[in-house]
Every structure is written in structure tokens, then in C-alpha cells.
Length: 193
Length: 350
Image (tube, rainbow over all chains, first blue to last red; front, side, top):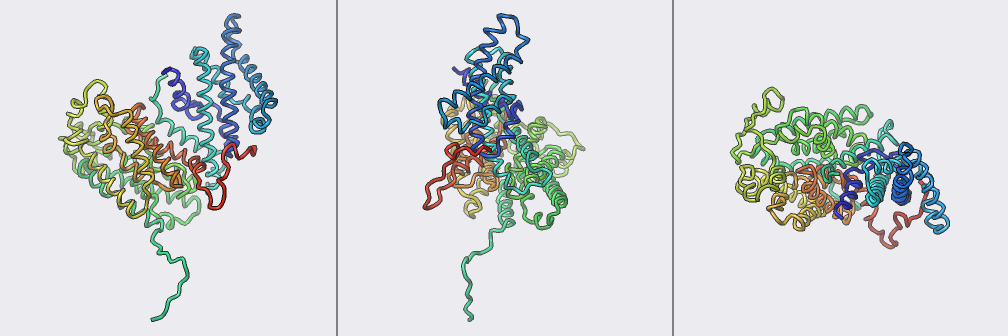
């Protein structure tokens, strides 16, 4: 049990995928202009990350390993992720039109989020079991959501600030991300995994 | 007698930016005096170096941006940032630490965001965190030994030579901080044995307790002058105390509450750093949440994290969270229902 909590603390705070490992920066910069859209993106990404780390684990353990095709892992995972994203989109559209309206536009974007592929590959590299893989994906998603939502609220404030012209837009966004990353270094040493 | 008729508002113009900044600087004096008394001239020299650099950096950026230099330098905000940084640095750190720190604080953390009142991160703490992450050795081994702990206090000239690097640092002048020592030695020892070391002195932590009481005094004065409100310091100290009561009640395995409160940068953080109005949450409720969050994070990092004191990191983390705290604690306008927030507001497709 403690081990599972440690995985969550590690992925959400200590080894945060965005601020410490620098994965998934594109949606982090792209979908952070408004708090509401950041929340939609967070929900969708967390869901897909959890599901895709489960599916890629299954695909690796039950398909690639028995056939000795481990070298195909990257391309397999990309396929798995694309399928999971499409599947999620279809299910959400059929079952909950409201949720689809909230998440709709973000779902296809997640396919290109490198954090999703990163989590799948790191799970194999770290030799995580089934439960660990799912939690690793969930923690990565929660960590992504945490910083994305905080960052979006922050960007609404930056938009109103008198930033020097050469630094407006993404430049000051990346500087802020750097300062946030500096703040997150305070968590280093909290969990050793 | 002529009847002077002036329409409202009947305000006295006392709270100009400059007045506020200078009042806060004045309020740091009891703490700085305690630092000088117990730890020597080091911090005074750090403050002076940081002030000169900060003013120069601020002037350079204002010049580049074609803003009125004198007007903005006079508001005293760069000076306050530099004073807070100088107080927080280890007294015997080499001269380039305050210089690098002050440049980073003013240029990156403050002016790139548009200057006074628009910065999102506390400039002094951003600089402190940068220095701590980049130069960990200097930031941990240059703490002065307090005079009451049998430390040999260097004179002004000698301190200056150490800081400028023309003289090596004698071992007798430096000492690990009490928080650091307690954290690392308590796992293999008992409270009594750890506390027997000279750096803990006869009361809580030699010298440190008086420095913290000095900042507490200054902070209470600021409260009385209504420069700050009670919400952030109260939340900060309550968060730290509650965590300590819940997890760290056993002094034989965790740092005791007295050491948490009156050692390290606790009081400086609670009254002078977290209360920076530009980087903190705005509403009363928001300020309480903001303070509580800092206190709790401070305890978590101090106890289980890799840093013995973490005021800088905790404050930065909640500077980062402050806009969202504001988003959710915005008071309801009188006569209106509270506004829908977050996902309830519906999706606007960014």
C-alpha cells in the first residue's frame, strides 16, 4: 500500500512529468490560456494516460514479449495510444454528450502528447507490474493536471501584466514554467523511487 | 476662519508605495540587529551588496524599457527585495551570491513580468531557490557560528575579507544550522543528545531564536500599522504547528515545534515574505488558504524532503498556486449569485 502511495507522490510531485521531466510541454503551453479549457484537457489526459498505460502494459506483456518482438514497442505503443484515444472519443460521444462537449476538442490532441508515450515506455523501462503501471499513468495524469490548471490560472494573470514586448506570449510562459520547475525542485528527495 | 469645503473622499495620502516599502524595511531592523549581534556583520554586508546590485539592475532594465528611472527606483521595492535576500543568505557566503541573486530577482522574477505589482513569484525567494539549487555547497556551509555557542565572531574587516574571498573561511566561524543538524542526527540519537551540541544553546537554538523573535516583533508592528493583515501569518504558523502536532510530537524522532517556529527563516517567511501583496492570494479566505498551504508544505519538505529549511520553495509553490486560489475564493458580489467556476462555467475551447 505504502509503495502505491509513494508511486503517486513521486509522479505527481517529485518527478512531475511536465516540470521535472519536461514531457507534455506542447499541451502545457498550448491549452493553458483559460482555466476552463485547462480543466477539460486535464480530465481527458488523465483518463487516457491511465487507460493507455494499462493497455500498453497488456500489449507488451501478452503480445510483444511472448513473440520476442520487444523492439517494436515504440510503434506498438503509438498504435495503442491512438486506438485508446479514438475509443475514448467514441464512447464519450455515445454515452455522455455533455462530457463530449466539454472534452471533445481535446481528445484527438492527446494522441500527440509525448507524456502519454513517455509513460508507456517508462513503465517498461522501470519493469512496473500491472497495478504499478496503472498507478504510474494515473499519477502522471494527476501531476499533469495539477500543473496545467495552476499554470492556466497564472497565465490569465500574465495576460494582464505589462510584460516587455520581446517576452510576451510563450516566452514569458516558458520563463514562468522554469520558475515553477525551480519551485518543484523543493520536492526532490521526498520520495526515492 | 474660512470654511474649507472639501468633498469626499477625506483620505490622508499616507499609504504611498514608498511609505509601505520603507515601513516594511524598517520592520526588519529588530531581526537584522539580532543577526548582527549573534552572527556578526555578515548579513549586513550581504544586504549592502544585494541592494547596490538590485538598484543597478532595476535602473538598467528601466533604462532599456524607457521608463522613468528615478520614479521607479524611489518606490523602494527593489530595495526591499534586496534586503530580504540579504537577510536570508548565509552570512559568510561569497560576494557573488548576493550579486547573482539580486540580478536574477530583479531581472527575471520581477522586471520581465512588467515590474512592481505584476510579478507572480516573490523575487527574493526565486533568487534564493535559484542559488540553493545552483550553489548548494556555498548555501549550506557558510552559515556563521552564533556568538553564544562558543563561536568566534569575526570583526567587520575580517568578515568583509571572507566575503570578498581574499581570506579563507576559518572553521571556527562556521557551523551547520540547527534545523539541518537536528534533522540529520535525530534518527540515530535522542533529543537530549542532539540538543547538547553548542549550536542549540541553552534555550531553543542559539541566536536563531532571537533573530526569529526579532522578525516576529517587526511583523507584529507591521500588523499594527495595517501594512499586512493577520490572515497569511496566522495561516502559515497554524499550518506548520498543526502538522507538527499531528506528526512530529515525538522530539526523539522529529524536529520539535519550538525549533520549527523559532529557527530557520520561519518568522521572516511568515511575516515578511509570504505577505508580499503582489504574489499572495487576495481575498481574506484566499489568504488563509495560501498561508495554511505554505505552512503545511514547509513542514512536509523540512521533515521528509531533501532540504532542512524550505521557506523559499514553499512560498514559491504557493505563489504558483495563488492565482487559482484567487479564482476559487473570489467573494460573491453583493446582490448576485456566486459565479460558476471551472468546468461548470462550460467550455470555451481556449
